[in-house]
Structure formats: C-alpha cells, structure tokens
Amino acid sequence: MFQGAITALITPFSNNRLDEDALRRIVRWQIDSGINGLVPVGTTGESPTLSEAEHKRVVEITVEESNKSVSIIAGAGSNNPIEAVEYSNFAAQAGADAALHVAGYYNRPNQRGLYAHYEYVHNHTDLPIVIYNIPPRAVVGVDVSTMAELAKLERVVGVKDATGDLTRPIRERALIQKPFSFLSGDDVTAVAYNVGGGNGCISVTSNIAPKLVVELHKLCREGDFVAAAALQDKLFALHSSLFIEPNPAGPKYAMSLLGLCSEEARLPMMPLQESTKETIRNAMKALELI
Image (cartoon, rainbow, N blue to C red; front, top):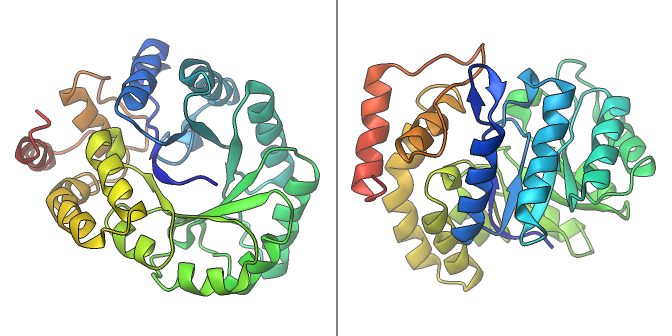
C-alpha cells in the first residue's frame, strides 16, 4: 500500500525548457528529507503543457534519481484511454511502481463511461492504478459505488481523493473489501481525511516543507491526531499561501527561495503578484524554512 507523505512534484523549467539538473536536485532533496513517495507529471507538474517527450523524460529522471528508494506513482492520466494506456505502459517500462490516472475532463462521461475508461486502462496495462478523483478539475467525479466496483479490478489499488468530501474514505472503506490506499489530494484537510481512514496525502506543500509534511503523516499513522492537528495548524498559512494564485506558480516561487529551481511556469500559468510573493515568504519565514 502507498501511504504517508507523497509529493506531487513540480516540473522545473529554465528558459521554457525542462531543467533536468534541477529536477534531479529536487528528487534527491525530497528523498533526503524522508519523503514516502513521489508523483511526477501530475497537475502540479504542469502535465497539460508538457510535450510527450518531456512527460516521459520527467518520469525517467524521477525513477532514475530515486533508484528504488521510494515509491514512484507516475502521472499517466488522460481523457483519452488510448493515450492513458501509452503513458502507463511507458511508466512501467521506466520502472515506476504505479500510475495515477485522472479521467473524464472535457468529454464528461457518465459513471458507466468512467468505469469503462478505467477498465480499459486496467486491461491494457500492467502497473497498479491509483484513481485520481478530482471533480473540480475533471467536472465529473467517480461516485462511491463506482469506486467500489473499480476496486474489484485486480490492479486498482488506491485513490487520490480531491473531492473535498471528508465522508468519502469512510463510505468507500465500507464497500472496498481489499487492501486499498486512501490518499488525500488536499493538504489542508489531510488530517481530517486520515481520521476517516485515509493513509496519507499526495501533497503540494511537501514540495517546500517535506520534513514537516512527513512528520504530520507519521503522527497520523501513529494515531496521534491531536499532535497532527497542531502541526497542521502551523502549516496552514503555508498551505493557503501556495494556492492564492493557480498552482503551481506558488510552489515554484517558494522553491526558488530555497534555491531548488527557478520560479518559471508555463502559460497559461502567470508569474505571481508581489503581494502573493510576500505572503508566501512570510509563511516560510514563520516555519523557519528561509
């Protein structure tokens, strides 16, 4: 099972090109900080504006640099199941441990269509599948009953839940009768999600504060939710500041302050306003990150 603090990695750029050196530096820093897993080329990794070659290269570098020391869940989702199969099979070839699959954006299938999409990907790939359930971005969401049916497929092994519904892990656990990774997709509500039976979080904030996010999820696994909630309160200002403007402009600016990469993001992501930068800097100073 996948659990704990799993970073939704940014993709660093320099002059609008993939910065491979920075990516390797970030992966090594994450591992040295104790992170439990990495997710390259998700939304935070700006997958919509990566070329196919860039997408594959980011996965390759992340797998190479991690050298099997942590779990790699490669972003492979598409609203086109044929493309999702291609990216998933490449991730398997590269050595990833699982693939993260979002579905349904723009073409907006019903629940039968969502099930058929994931079933097709499952039947034409070999990697374990983590379903990314994010109605705010995909417009459609995977219902609890559909998730339970999908979990009956052998290699559907978990969910990244960004529905905002904190009853989801409770309701899904009642129906899913096998080991299954319930991962929050939202740092701000991750502790509450874990109280409901979650196993961890695919985190944006851990790009900037991996040690603190790792500690938070360690406390959750140990059942010390009082201490976890206190740490979440400390992290709240940072969580909030990173999303004042569209992700990943905030995390990239924060990481530039740490000397890990440039703050460069691709259109349509825009450079941050100075007021947002100041808020991020203040949140990082309060946590003694800078």
